[in-house]
Length: 328
Image (tube, rainbow, N blue to C red; front, side, top):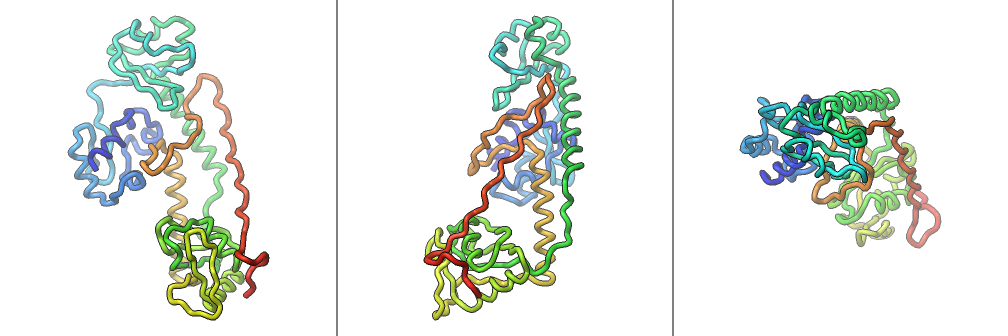
């Protein structure tokens, strides 16, 4: 685990250039952000491993970590460089002694730290190069203003998640195939009633399904209680055994009372956590592939508005051997 923690925190000077952490957490990163990258969710065990890494510092409560402050101020000696075809980072060696260079994975921008003040280096740069360079202290201020403006826009236009939920639409299911998918399960349940969303984790044999209407949800429950429906394989959209009762058939129950309330509370907490993580620059896990998108960085010109996500087409509902939906 220590090797994984070193990779997460010490690669690419993660803390030094993560503006989100500087603004939101004063350079402290909660262990909650690590659970998606590690196979361990034991805070005490993580804290014990992190304390062995001399470059890092664990908070007093043992629930957050930061990088120890450098012996001298890197920012005073660091330049932000916007990389293009006319910029050669090797040429900066002629303007001063370079102690370290950090290049973003997108190859769009870099930070170059010198042994002398950044302002002195700026005065030595030729005009064409100077147009693509600024001291990191100035970059910090501009980037902080940009992120704060972005956050305020998101908060202004965000639709608050209401805990006032619609009763009788959430179903709990079990005994599905362990290698199936949310898409297949959605098609399976839509044979009985219109589905809004399926909460399912790959590898499990249980999950939750949200129907669009309480009456339809009850119809679906009634169907699964009267006949046996099984998945013979991971891609099976449900096979019906109308005259046979199997104990290992798919079971469906509609949440009520405290169980239903706890589900909506959990859903709200998941939504809040996803919105928080979305603002962070997180490295992809071993199982995940990095998204193919342009890196977000501050340019000297006005930043373009972010592209709106493409709408996904609704999943088509297919029934095996029948063109119409099952009637209860």
